[in-house]
Length: 397
Image: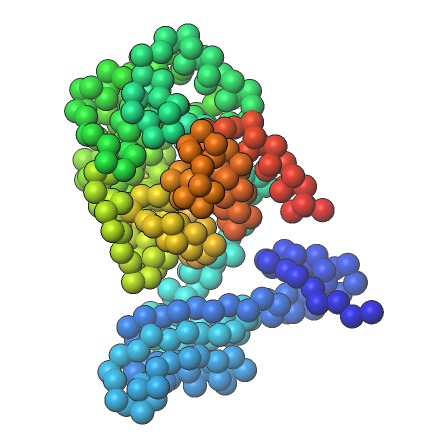
């Protein structure tokens, strides 16, 4: 019998080799040969790209460069490296000896592949820790707004009612709860920090005493973040990607966790003809820059998550591409948060109103989990928890 085997990571290859009784020494040699990687490098001088191509060919791998780079007609080219992990590890050693910046490329290449193959992630949230090495976590959404796009805004509800909903989310399997005081739906009206604090502070004070899971606050205002963190919140979920230097300093001072999200434009304008040359590359570049700024401000990587910002300045197609290629963001070496819940791209694909998007949300969220998400931000915790149990059972069989 012949079988074409399906594997998605090194652990699965190691398991297969062990099952047929391969010697441990042989496993260490062969396992890195089992997965093919395509790594794109942009902006290489053509002569450096040609050296890189020759080094890859010498290892039995390959590198694709622009035709003009081979003939000397262009000065710079992008390059796609094609090889297995074993070949890339040997390439790194060769590049360390090369000039023209290729020795620096070796360090970057090692870091990216190490991040890409990272399996265990832990997020530090104050006194809490979330481990993502086994199961996908759930962030429950608690909107204290009168104008939420999903119609779930709890502005004007009693604290007892809000507590009941939060406790239900926790009981249904939420690993943290994200409290929002300002709607970020397309075209939403901006509110002052004072008004936002008035909405969320009573809820924060009440839930920190009643809920035994970490609380996050969805805000881009440093003033709101400071008040929230001062009153027991463990994480700030910033739709502007910590673009405000003051926000970065506050999060670092409180030793809090942060979600760094991508958004093109502002909520008021983000869905007015969003455009990208390469949505994944541009979102990745943005997040990398914001992560580096956060590190410089004193926020350790162990307290960061990244979010590609589904629905924030993206068309339906952009959202689908991001969900399909989510694992590209593994190169940053940080856990990934994805929020698809009840969003308009689901409504457009299914031609349903917001109150009929639970099944679409579940489908999109499970695809995100399968493609690499570590945490999913949703309104409907119970339904997603059930779906994730099935996915986990399939993953671990």
